Amino acid sequence: MSQAGFFGTGGGGGGGGGGTIYHVTTIDATETAIAPILVPIDSAITVYALVSGALADYSEAIWSTVTYGARRSGAGLIAIDMPASSFATDAIPNTLASARVNGNNIEITVTGQPGQIWNWSALVFHVTQSI
Image 1 (cartoon, rainbow, N blue to C red):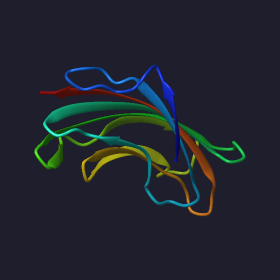
Image 2: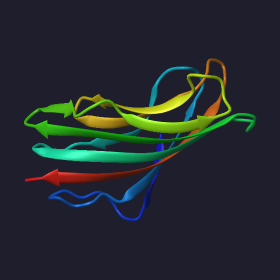
Image 3: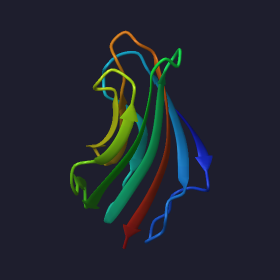
Image 4: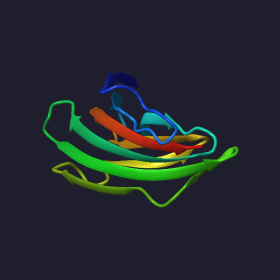
């Protein structure tokens, strides 16, 4: 996984998060984290990601948006609801982008196809509200 800053970095105290671009390559149908976002103690966060993926030879592609939120009071990060996403693809079904809680991180995730090389990029924004 690699990343590049875009429009600054995220902030707390009710601040907005700048966008960050992340990249990852998948070689199978395993859900893979492309963007980990650490959620500070005593805060709430909304994450919005624009995700683009393509088979290595560009014969199939997908675009997706993912919105996800969570809150952290003390040690536990709790998802507010299921990830909301929209997408379009000309790829095999189940090629997708989503989000999940992992420890104290929200992760934007991507899932490719068995035996295929998929290249993924995600532009991720977040807004954090904290005390």
